[in-house]
Image 1 (cartoon, rainbow, N blue to C red):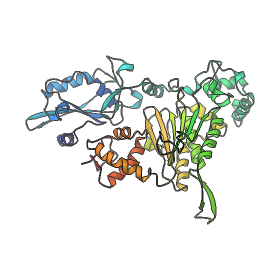
Image 2: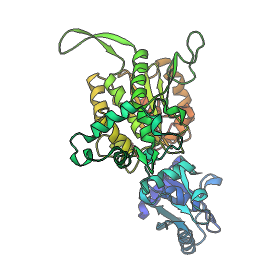
Image 3: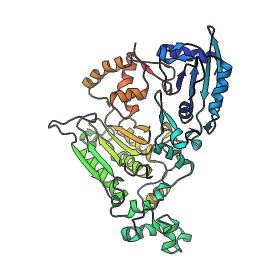
Image 4: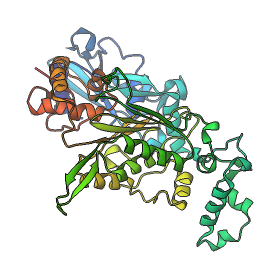
Length: 480
């Protein structure tokens, strides 16, 4: 970091008077803070890393107090960095301003294969942190596990189900699957069934795998009650809305069975609860019925949730959720994005596969192509319908996709007007995206910003702290 960049940081701090997702402030007027470990861990565990600036007293109106001794401070910062696993390598910078000295420690994000970074004195389970807004929060056991699962390539889709037996599987479906496996595979077709079962992960060490149960058991929920789909229809645009008779849900169904059965039943549920309107096809000039959403896109989204959800012991108590609102549908599944891919890369680059055996088996059964075409198909189908692109969100162990049923995907005007003045007042103090979503009571940060904040930004009622970089992770939203 150059001196000019550090000066700019200090100016932004005085203007916004807050910490952010990538900025932590420490006084260090008398000595080096004794415990930087939480922040060193949380910054190291996010892609963009973060910066700790020493010499600003947050507790006294962000007073620029300066540090006690820049040379000793840098030494002690590095000593704490050496106590992390893996070791943190900070980039330290020093600035003298108006007779006071400031130190910046830039903490780089480490590769996902090395995460979580943690303080050795506490150990991996207690010493791993993640950054939430301006706070360092302990990682959940699942968050720690998810990094380990990627690093060690755990295959939870073929973990064994001790209570299941070959007799508990649908023998006809299993035989048909094995015959499809043999097609075009001369080396495989000459093997006996028991060998094929082990080789193709229907069994492991003579025990039935989860993939076999999910595909061929008449009722997988006998072993895992929550490996299902819960589907609801909400009478409004937000959870908690009530219908004319005070009902919370217009429809509510627990969808169970094998993966193919759940897929078909879930599509039927969505189709049943979608509105159908008559339009004039601009190409043919003929009248035709059109549902709120293209069924092909709905199918791909539900299938993606079933194939790519996390099937580890940490999430086996969490169902996939389908929530239909008046203006949108949200499909949520346990387990965030797997591997190195980012939300904005979905459908553009080949991702890592969390459940490769399950995905391959569904390809053999002709249920999925397994060619990473799902998200491009979703986008194309929505585009044909003249609908907005889907919103994807990855939040602390949960992934969601949201479809809007018209280009006017805003909540009703009265609701927006009511919330606008509240948001403007809330943003008198600069706020992060997460803080705004929490204030609105919304789980989707992207939805909160796009639907509620950006219209106010366009009107000039809410401003960005970094207007030339609207997508910056350091971005804050404020009103004057």
